[in-house]
Image (cartoon, rainbow, N blue to C red; front, side):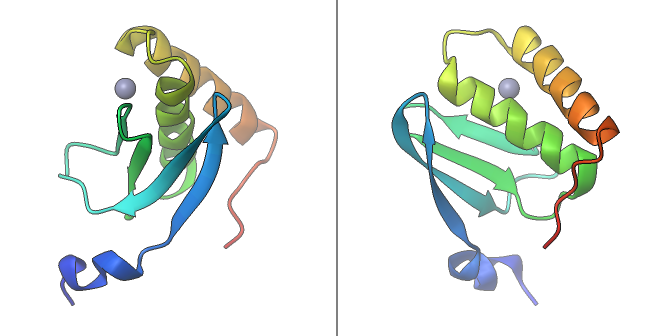
Length: 96
Ligand SMILES: [Zn+2]
């Protein structure tokens, strides 16, 4: 089955980040990319194939970009990994 066929059936969530509405979409990104934050469109794309701690880290990473668009990649990357690591250690897991 092609990923493109399922594109429209992947769920999108409406979320609030930084006090503004954003769309969080499960996308079919290039293999080298787990997530993207499109600041001007208030759209976060996270690859639909990632799971577990990588998914948690990527979600936090892109949400930090959304809330703090002025932050550089390195502090976003480091902070997301630290937060994901702590949440993972505390036992937070996706259940569905
Ligand atoms: Zn980034």
